[in-house]
Length: 349
Image 1 (cartoon, one colour):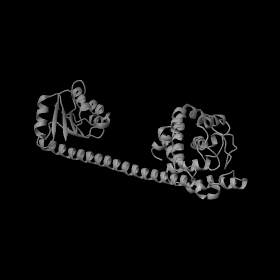
Image 2: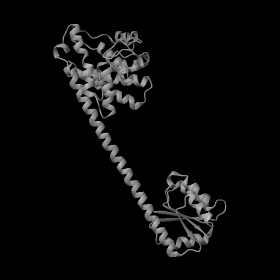
Image 3: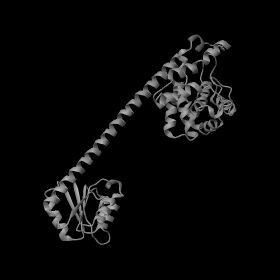
């Protein structure tokens, strides 16, 4: 505990200090000038203040009000010493933030008792604040642990889907990274870009409900088979529906709407323009681009410059023009992601 005594009288300072020196387990600072005392409080944290009422330059009421305006001194106990018994003075001091009063001439035993009680109160405040900070840190650690576990589950589920779809996981990794870059390019906040990065790999989670004969068919799908394939978006949304976290709710939006088109000709709901969730608009570009660049049972891989041109060509029809502009602006980073060594070094998925 650290205590500050402010009084313009050297004799009063010495007297108060001598009376409480055996009561205070800690340091006692004496100050003759209230302005200098305020500077001391700016540089140091005291646990109890004893201040005289009548002082030159600044009286005890003004000193108390100035101290209370500082966040670190809003609840620190302040004893005002006064010889004025006027009720108006007491009310003014209370309004300024005084915790207790001591009348001159004061009794030494009373002073010791008041100091002891208020220091005990201050100690309880400090311990409570420390406990609150500890609990906050523990909650943050637990939350981080839960989020990490949630992210890991998403990562492993996405990998499982890709293996079933005939891939080794690089597709979901690239889609995640490209989606994050596009999100950054359109000015989304970092935490939202991170959310898109984590949930983009689940865009095709519904393929788990599609027959292998359709998923792995080497040739073009019939109309009936295409209709079945398109059901993967609805299946994916059902798998992810009613999530209790922002992560799962975002994943549901992407799974449900990443095949919608800007001009309203997509599926399953034929949404158009801004009615399509922005997360789905972003992932749609990343997914189509990487799919074009990837070899599939039904097609060879496209060169990345040809796939890039296709994304640009479909701006305003298939894709959100703003997202396409971000895709173009981020092209140096996106093209680097498409290099084989980049896929191998991808972190997270």
